[in-house]
Length: 163
Image (cartoon, rainbow, N blue to C red; front, side, top):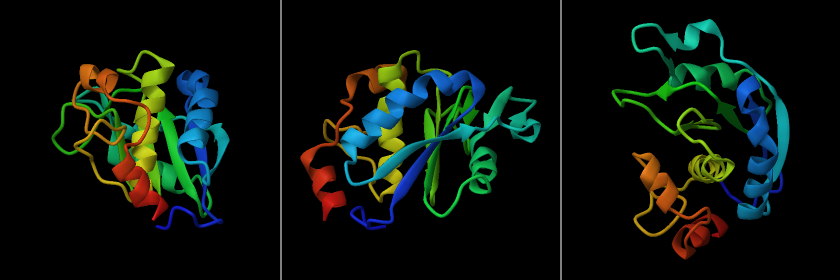
């Protein structure tokens, strides 16, 4: 996907508990990706089928499938307050597939941390892979790793998306 495509837009959806993070996330995404049109979407709450009763967690892939039918032709990010897992991982902070991404606010206790992970997941939507530099695209497997990485993209990742 070409980052500077003028038709590119992103809606930020949220569940009831995560609504408090929306404004900060929209602003941070606008600063990080200035040619991406970012706007607040509507409240969407995970349906009961997304909960894995054995794990007591939400299935990330199921959530992305639920989000898929809730938005138009652009990109979508969903802030979800529940604890999310994916494919054999104990938990994930976020997940991105195709045109949809989500960020779980469950383990992220500050707007800054939610914004970092939103920048990270939207980066995936725009074609960025995990980065080894000091960058928002650095993989985070713990809260300490999320706290240690910056909100911004490194020069290498920025060059990749700006082409």
